[in-house]
Structure formats: C-alpha cells, structure tokens
Length: 312
Image (cartoon, rainbow, N blue to C red; front, side, top):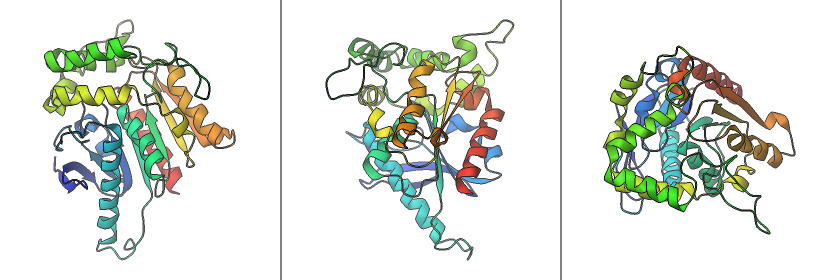
C-alpha cells in the first residue's frame, strides 16, 4: 500500500495513506498504525478521500525526543490538515481549486484524545463533524474537588490502566516484555477475546490482525512515555467546546472502558451546545474496542453515513 508523507513543523516525517475523494481522516489508537483500517479503506474510499496517518512514533512515521505527548500528536494533525488543504488547492480539477474542504476526522482510542486536544489548542475550523471511537474523555480515576469536574471512578475510568500503580505496571510491560504487552493489548481490544459468546470462534481473525498490525515497530520506551501523558489528560471540559456534530461509538464487549465513561462525551458535547440532543449521537456496537475490525461493514456504513450528512 502506497505511503505519502509530509513534515511536521519540527522536521519530523509523518507518513499517511491517501484514498481519494472528500476527506475522511482516520486516526488509529495507542501502539497502532494505519494498518488497523485494512477493512475500512475500500468501502469508505468509494465516497471519500480517506487519509489515515501513522501518528508520530507509530508505523511508518518518525519519532523525536520529547514527541510523546498527546498535544504534539494534535499539532501533527494540524500540520497534516494544512498539507491536505494545500494539496486540494493545487489540484488540476478547476471545480475543487481554491475550495477549502470539510474534513470529518474519526478518532479511535487515543486518536479521540488527539482530536479533543486539537479542539482545545487550535479550534475546529474546517471540520464538518467528529467521530469518537471507544474512548472516554479521561482514563485515570480521579476524586472530585472544589472548582473541578466531578469524581471519575471505576464506573467510568479505564478498566486496566487507571492510576499511578497500574500505569507504572503497563509501562514496565511495554519496555521489558513488549511482545507480551502487544498480545495483551490485542486480546483486550477484540470483543470475542474479552467476552466470547457461546459458540463464537475466538481465534477467527486474531492471527490476521496480529500479522497485519504494524504496531510492533513502535518503540516500547516511547510508548511508555506516551501512555503516562495520555492516561492523566482530562478532556472532559474541553469536549464541551465542540460546536459541530459529533458521534460516539462504543463497543459493548470492549476491554478498555465502561459504557458510562464513553457516554460522558455525548453528555459533555450536548451540554456545550445548550443541551441539544442532536449535537451528539451515541451508538453501541456488539463487538469490542476495535469494532472497525470486528464489525467493519456496520462501522463503514455508520461512519460513512454520518460523514455524508456532515458534508452535505
């Protein structure tokens, strides 16, 4: 599959895979790469110019010292968006020349956190809507205190990495036993591994996903540092700044977050838009964290349909 590339403002090379039409931006999750979307490219490319970057430190993209921050990844997305705008303006198609496209980004897992940070830092100009996939706006458990958001407990926080001790354990795993950490991540992200149903083949697709996953090229120390930054980042209030349509997708059998934690994004978007229910949609898939892999046909239909409405 062909890779194109652009440079971030600090010179780091960022690789991405383009699929040509209107712009749908697919952002993968922690330790992943654009290879996650092998079951989505073809279907979504019928109606959109699909761009799937490898985030800094992942897949075919470069990494830099100190670049393991969610905010740095958000800045990379801004540089990529700027690059895409220039590419559109230079097109040979007169009908598209000089027209600023609407982009609908789809943030999966940490990709959602990158988009929330983007909104906080750079606003949302040029985005027609957002899709947030199986990610809560805060991963750690935190107590409530005066002047801050309410308490965030085990009913909403991440199921496995939610405080200092669990985060340090995860960091050690990614540094000392990265292969085992990667296997554990895959098993926690596939619903048929987390909570198999009676008669369900728990091996179907597992080897294919593992073989196709370019995440094994990620550096364990770099990922450990990104993890520490990501788990403590509280996006709850920033989510309320979203002023374009949002859609939140959650996996019923995810091994990452309780449904209540992910639904908080819906509540926050609606709160920031005067309580309007239509400001944010909510849909639960019957698979796990990687519903774009397990329920790819439904995922493609839902995301494509939402994006078409946002770009109408």
